[in-house]
Length: 434
Image (cartoon, rainbow, N blue to C red):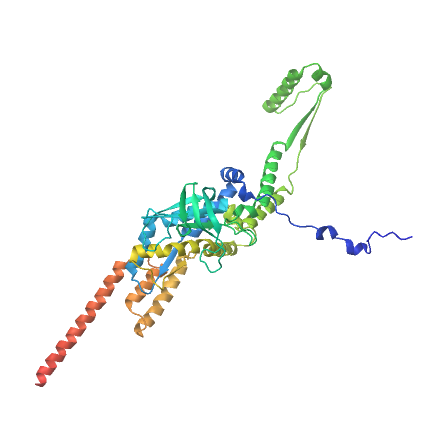
């Protein structure tokens, strides 16, 4: 008689439970605003994640370039950025987007009609950060793949009152939603961190509670149950308190012969290693090195510099993904305000977070000086171009646009003076020949 139980090979069936395991999306943390607010208020790790990275994304800011503009014009553009507090506003917007998944930035200009498309000639008055629960899309979604607003909405309503054209609203998302998701909003950065964070917080709390129970005094009192049944709990507690008071004062213990006392201590071996592993899991989920997220120095023989370099690369990636699209939307307006037009060869690059040491700066300056001298002698560059390069490189922060313009004027004056001397010499030589 055969039993058909489908078990053909025990060795091949090992691990079948692991193969049957599947991932099921639980209730998204991004939609639980109450829990996000509680995490922001009570959990310092969450605040560090949502503040540190956005601050680093705007800390060194960016360098703007254009071959059609002079240095003083680029300085005027930087002054306009400071006047509008662009860096501070975008840093704050990135922090809230990291926490809630998305925010909206309303471009407030000198026009009163917010339903019309934004014109490049409009003057920006301020930028307003709006939480996503105050912004709701209107009408149908744009499904035209050739439209610049593809997958978005043509109009949005703010506070259920103000209707705004999509060109006047910038939606800043943190982590992107899956492609199958039709939602225009992003996902909180804490979605990938919350599981590891709960384990770390739970382990930290339990270890903290264990400290209070690391040493337990055990009193064995004869007839304790009878005394409690007789309602003498206060007398028992008073007696134990008196024994502990005598012990603490004289380092001795007095008990009746029929009572006993013993002491138990708990061991904490291995708890530190376990907590370190939970901590590393949080740092890995947050894509931040332990040295930055928890302020811990590098362990072992590692200097920690490799972790810092990887973190800087991660910040640069976030700048390109989250910050560059916002700036590309704002730059045409800012350029029109500063120059009256938008240069065709306009571009910008984010300043690297890695700062050079004094020795590295000196070596770089020596290399730059040697190369610049060769280029000037061969007529490839002039002094004004070298000064511009020095200013852009940051090796000399005190070089201003006025200084470069003065150098240019001096060179022009010297050139005109040399030409006038040559002309005078030619006239004198012609007069002598006559």
